[in-house]
Length: 328
Image (tube, rainbow, N blue to C red; front, side):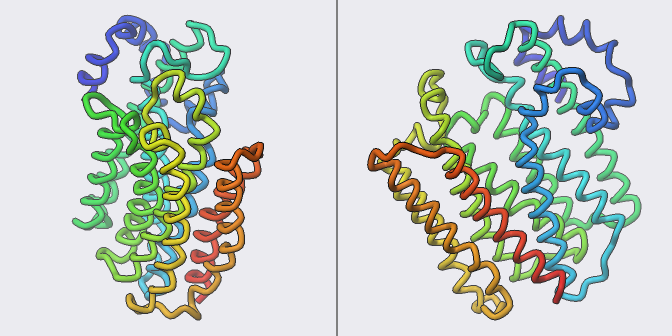
């Protein structure tokens, strides 16, 4: 795996090897400490802390479903799995930056030295995270807390990261990046959390489907503010591939479908009286749809308000469902 990475970044191979000795070996097993210790705080922007917050919410949601079903709470599986999902998401956020084309800046107003340093650190942390994930997976397996279904979802997550981030696939630049990111955060991670506690799947996990659509809508919204930059550097996002004329109505459909699917949850054994709190975010969802519609009609955008609204719709829906299942 390491050879494959170096093969695709030949311009930085010598620099990476030269700087390798500067990294303490312990950092390869404590990537979070390396992130905090590095002098270059700009790296935190590439890690995208909001994505990590969403991972925490969806992982807790998956564990809450198992608790609601009466499965005994395994604290060691929960916390080790939680750290593992954070490391998986950090890798998914950083690894694409290692393979970003030379003409694209990683951050605004960066120098060549800053870019090289950021790229090197992103590669170091990605490698350290993957090594740490392997160690945690071995610990869970050795303590008989990693069932076959949990292992399969872990492998699915790793495979998704590779095709999302690395050549020759690099689906982040194919128009499918937002969808893969939504699947990772809203479907794979909560299901992985559930299987760590229950050692199998359950029809209640169908709740991850509307959450995935809300997450997808959130990442689509983020594309709009970056549309000009994406066009400038020929990045292929869901928005640039289909065009805003098609994406705006699709966004509306995804958001509305999520709530329609929630209405159909009694077919999976969940009563609406149990999950009614998820519908508390419906007014925010309609407001999100209205904002994007106004932007498509030429109204000056308030990007911060739109982004926060989309984040609230996905984040609060997940939080309300999580709280419901933990307290019942």
